[in-house]
Image 1 (spheres, rainbow, N blue to C red):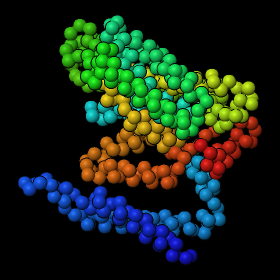
Image 2: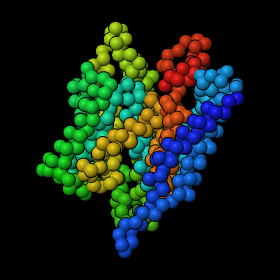
Image 3: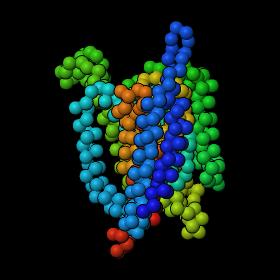
Length: 428
């Protein structure tokens, strides 16, 4: 085997790493009595460049093995898809069991992180309907998140209703705004659709920022009512009408945090159940057909207008539910909580997990939201490790963590051979 190719490629990768890491890692700032000084760190740069060289050389040598060249990439993807198919049987129940028992075994900080991750899981599943199933690129999904949050806050404060009474209204209002967005973009696709949805998200944020008489402007809305358990309030007292008093428990702030965790867990599971049910219905199959070929849908007599509007409305509805939960959890909302970065994060979760994959959204959330928290003790390197992990993941799994996408209806032997064939063709 000729080693010149792998060596040259590894050397080039090391040079690129040197150019990237030399200014970012090789220079450290120190604030002293005479101002800011730069201290070089050549050993750290050398270690990173050497690691890139060794890893790239190992990857190239592994890819150049004779039996891998003969088998081709399709066979490797087929074997990987078969392994993932067997793993999913146990992975999904395991993740669900861990999610149910986690509040009883973890600290409050871990429960708070779990609430944040479940919120992003719910947002990812909602956006997955629009992007993953219907194939409509939406960069303004945070707008529906904001509509749900502000709808709950304003309705609750104006009427005195509780969280459970205002939650459906938040979802309905967000769905109406989803339909409002859908009408102007019916004839758009690709980059133009992305630009319009991005503009829609920014318009909603600017309106919230400037309509001071209604939304409070940059000051936001505070004093948002907290959710209750059948009328039982979570407070630090054990008086009548409180959770601690009714169950004769010592008052603890952990009770409210655990209750919020199970509320968002229930909402996320409801989102997943509805999505899976819709996917097996004619509406879900029409969404998938629209994603594959809009022209073919029109030729078959499918109402593309209704199909797009339902995708926007259903996805926005779940975004509104998540926004209402965010408002009741925080007790305070402002336009700064609904910037474009939220939309970008949720879209990255959907794409990284695999377009149309429910399990992929969960795994991508664990990586993107839980990953930086796991490396928090490594304050100087955690974002570097996180970015490197994303790059490696996208190189090894360019179509997402879970790429298998089984058609809704299959007949005969094709149903058994489909997952391997789709993986070999990189479909999904």
